[in-house]
Length: 141
Image (cartoon, rainbow, N blue to C red; front, side, top):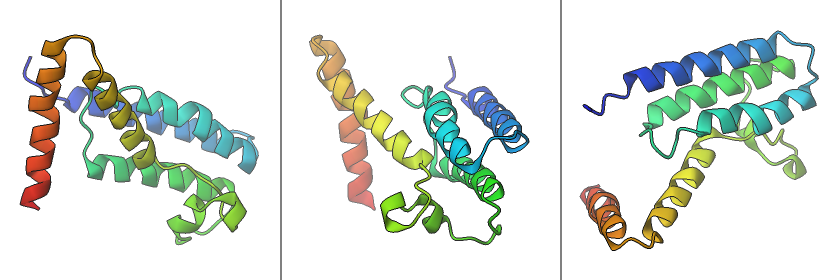
């Protein structure tokens, strides 16, 4: 095992592109589009987040792909601000979810689950590989 994730990234890209293209070409209403993205497309992409290390450029690319479909379905200009799309509905936005939020949530759940594992070995490996490396990285920046 060489920890080469290119195949997984390519599959995630292809699956997301296929699903979004199908959704964009469908007769789903704008509200249905948001519901489908929130309940089907993002969870299917986020399924691999716990085991696949995703970089911020990948997450931004996927967010841009999703935003493109949402803008298209709502008949908005391509130059429409993403913040308006992501803003909560109660604050006059569309309430579109972000992949980054789901990635952070899934990563936190995986870390907490790993730290609460009853096995001492599992907890120590998580501490050595996860928390110490991340805190050292944060101290450098």
